[in-house]
Image 1: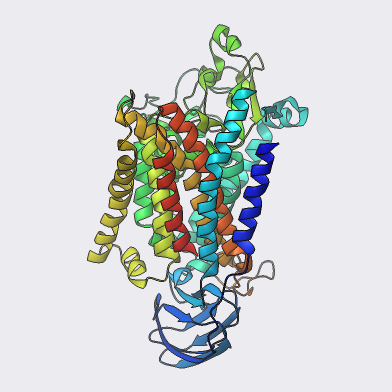
Image 2: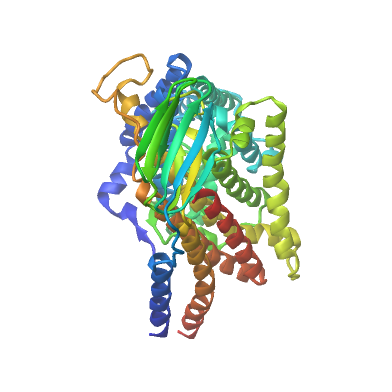
Length: 153
Length: 443
């Protein structure tokens, strides 16, 4: 009975860590402009950080072959011809960390041409760390308790 | 949960005992393998449009690491086409009863090499060149062909499946992680094996071949070296061998004390973390270094790769467990406790592969219609656009895999620590730290 109670408590705590809303510091949305140079197989800069609600304009410049920029989660993309600039404008209304990928086959390492966009706080990373911590802290006494019960039986 | 004998169901039993279903799968696999070699060598050099890259490194890899290994252990080895031509040549037959007189040299594998060190090295050799291997069709074609011809060559010199058992870069980690799978091949009654005349499961009989994996089934206590080829089920005259469904990670309750297996766990854990950083991270300098084989940057990358796997990770682990003295030697404690890294490593690979596979899965459709990149459109899907799949559930899925792997490892660590009579806390701290690093790399 007690082990089931612990397990329930453990699961409940896990759900709170995974889904409870995180406190957000209110920051007024801004216009953000970035110039990203794309070459085989890298973006420069490869990591962008904006606040939630910002209006983001990315100027993608390709310095060698045709490259693209696709943002996971936002499902938007832009393509730039060699030496040309193409613009992508969007509102960063989804928080978290998103991979930016080249969506035009540009050579051998194309599938690994990856950048990173962080909007606000990377909440899922912190939640995951919380879950891992909870798993270790919670599992140890629970496991000991179950082992002890088994021995008693 | 106790074990459920799957071979007591007539349909399973007849499917396993009959050679034809397995041969049919083998032939399809061998045809696919030969086509992958051909596509790699003569198809388009664009990896994402070539059958060899798309079907080997995306489709096959997804099935292997997300389904076959976690749920069927060495299930892939049961249908792997690589040893087939060599084995047929070695036996001088495809299905006929074996000839008593060996047709080739039939030597025993050298005693000093009867371990998985060579498999650790062969995996690392491929891993160091993985950026090129995973993206360049003709390199993939050459490596696939080399494995096939290597297996054939070894079959003519050594007895049984020497390549699979001692050299295959994939077989080593499948064996390691198969200990966590809920499937096993075991004997039913030990006494029957003790009194069995001639041990046909190991030596062969008119009903089938002696164990190709050089394993005596009567002594099997873990999955690591059983290739699930089913020969022993066919040759056992007493119907004493079964395929069982069992709890996950049942073998890990009896930790290994072998250093080659311990280092395999570090090789796999470290490789998953390095791949997550190099291939899926935003750091272009790392990608450049990994891809430009032979340059100074690549040598630094290779040295760092090997240093992390063979020095840094094992040293940190050794430091963690060194404070607890007990009757067992340090080497034995190290090997026993490293068993905890097996579920963690498996789930690290699952989390890494989820990202890689879901992002690139749509290439499968296009490659199916135009496998050589020659402008064909066999099934009308050649123009299928690239589109990452299920990106909204990717991060939660990876968290589930990594945190689940951590819990699984904590559980295994407690058992291994109890076996080694030391505290499990340092091992748990090590697993926790590794998980945090992997979360940071992937999310």
